[in-house]
Image 1 (cartoon, rainbow, N blue to C red):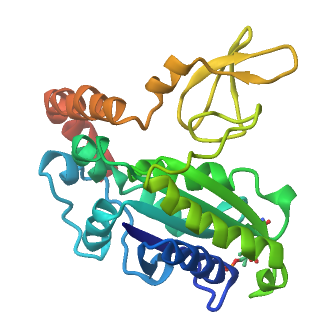
Image 2: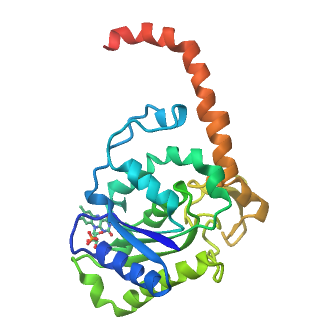
Amino acid sequence: MKILTLIASRRSPGNSEILAKQASAGARQAGATVEIQNIAVSNIAACEGCLACVFRGKCGEEDQMGILVEKLLKADGLIVVAPIYLLSPASIIKKIMDRALMMSLYADELADKRRGALTITIAGKSDWNPIGIEMMNQFALSYGFPVYDFLEAYAPGPGEILLQEETMQTVNTLGEGLVSYLQGKAESRKPLPNQCPFCYSRSVRLLGGNKIQCPFCLVEGTLDQDYQINVPKEALEHAFWTPAHRKRHLEDWIKATRGRYMQNRATIKEKLEKYN
Ligand SMILES: Cc1cc2nc3c(=O)[nH]c(=O)nc-3n(C[C@H](O)[C@H](O)[C@H](O)COP(=O)(O)O)c2cc1C
C-alpha cells in the first residue's frame, strides 16, 4: 500500500508540514509505505497550454512534474495538505492541477484501481476559507483519487496547530482510516445534506426552478423546500471526474478542437498580424 503525501506550504516548520507528517504517521501505523514531498519547493512550471500532453502523449516541460506524475500514478493513496492563502489553497495546488490533463491519458488504467485521498486545509479563520476543501478535492480528483475524507483545520501561527491535541489526534486517525479505506475495510465520508455527494462541495449553481448543479464536479440534482441537496445516485455517474466522462471530454471535446483549429489556422494567422 503506497501513500504519497504532498505539502503545499513553504513555511517550515509550518502547520501544513506538521499535519502532513501527523496524517502520514497514522498511515504508516496502519501498514502503508509513505513518501512525503513538499511541492511548494519543487521545480514545477506553469502549464504552457501547448497540449503536447494530449497530442504527443508527453509534456515537453523539463521540470519535476514528470517525476511527480509517475509517483501519483503509482500511489494507492494521496494525502495533500495546503495552507489557505487569500480564500483558497496556496497557488502551487492550482499550478499542479492545471497540469492534470496528462492524467486523462491514464483514465482507463486507473479506473479499476482502488484509490483514495485525504485532503486537509489549514487556515487562519473559518469565515475566510470559502473554497479551500472544494479546490483541494478537485485537486485529488483531477489526479484520479476519489475523496476518502477531508479536514479543515484552523491555526494562524507557525506550529500553532500543535496546541490542538484533539485535531492532531483526528488527523492521525484519518491517516489510518485512509489505509483502511484503500484496503476496502472502511467507507468514504458521508456527505452532509448541504454537500455535493461526489466532491463534498458546499456551493451550488442555480439552474432554474429547483434544479441545481455542483459548480465544481458538475453533478446535477434538486433543492428541496428546506434547501437540502438531493442528487439521484445515477447522477453521480455524470460527474466531471469519472474515468468515463474524463475520456469522453478528452476524445469528444479536447481532441475535437484540433480539427476546427487547423481549419481556421490560416485566418487566425492573418488576423494576428496586427497584434504582433
Ligand atoms: C499570504 C497569506 C494569506 C493568507 N490568507 C488567508 C485567508 O484567506 N484565509 C484564512 O483563513 N487564512 C489565511 N492565511 C493564514 C494561513 O492560512 C495560516 O497562517 C496557516 O496556518 C498557514 O499554514 P502553514 O503554516 O502551513 O504555511 C493567510 C496567510 C498568509 C501568509
